[in-house]
Length: 603
Image (tube, rainbow, N blue to C red):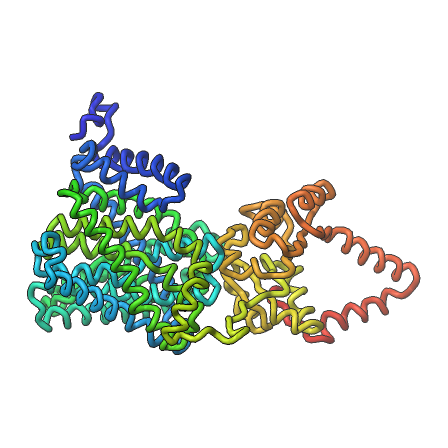
């Protein structure tokens, strides 16, 4: 028991809670300091693990506690990665992605393996790798994949995820993550690489995928529609789905054995099952909101995951381990330019975007740490080589923000060399133009419902360039039929607004007043919209005169007051009634209601 837990039967903390508290406190303090120094927070978490582990203070004595929590982080990470894998969307990414995506990971792994083997033949690095026959293989696997956490986070922070380079990088990361999960699935069979266990592994994955797909296709949408207007419940339901599929996957053998009396050996690991859980609901309209909500919980466990990885790092046995880490980091960058850049260019990506993608993906994946850690547990590699891979990860993670921020400048400097190597510059105007919207409609209530109809009748070209954000999924098909893009999500969330393209809208409109909004005020909505779309014209709706001033102060360009419009209509009706023209006015109203065949999304 850790001595910090002592202090009386009622005053101490359970060891598990105490270890988590120590990990979070130190990780939080170091994350603040590292952020100030512009160093990725992942490095802070690793350092926290080193400090708390046996190499440092030894304050965390029971690593099983952190391993348990870290496994939850890994499950949620894979679940979120699965949510990014929309198979139908991948099939529409174009020739470049469909060719280079499946080939990138295996070709990079082979390149890394061959380079390390060649160095060993020359007598370089034998002191580091000679402890294991699997050393070159694990280094090849380590340099084959880029970091999903770092790359996606930096693309999101810089609002570049919707650029050509961002979409290519995301697609490449998805394929790399799929390959990484396959490696994790067959890794225990490295010692005995017979076809039987590998076939059984993929058979289990196929069975679980069919079960999950059927449930996600026919059962899950019904349940999610019931709770769509209660976003807080989305988190609980999505986690229930994730861990439900995990439980089914790890118990496939038990279920089949209890029915047929046969143990087929097709149980699916928790990580792979979580990936399947995410993938099978990626195409649902709720996926963006699920990603937003699960990310908060995921980050808590991922922090502990990296702290746990840091605790496995032994004290460097001389400067050789650190130098080897630098060498693996350099090999990672070399692999991106030797394998990834030519592959992207040859498959159809223009030179500029291929180079930008390579520069922004020049790091080692967190999956590589998982693969190396499992290899250590399986006895495939020794602690020294595991430390080398972790050091290389830290080095490339620290270098990533620098490479990311200066990618444009470095691409321009590399252009003459690439030109001489036969990589031609893209034609002028060849970059893809991003989708921009005339109007972003935040929430659909009755006023917005009527507005959508009027846009469809009078300004259909504007409606075709309209994006809508709303929780009510039951009206989404009707909105899409009218011709607007529609996204499920919370329009008070900056992440949701960016995902829906609100940051690229010329006009942002919210017609829902405070007495209808439930989780925020119109002032809050305007502030978030102004943050996301600083150059847009923002129109909002008020219910009182004092509120009009507050909404303008929050950043609105125009404020609607529906009571004034209703009063004008009432005045018109009263005046018509007093002058014997009410029937004529009613005929005009009836023509408006019925004559145009209104297509309202709400009654």
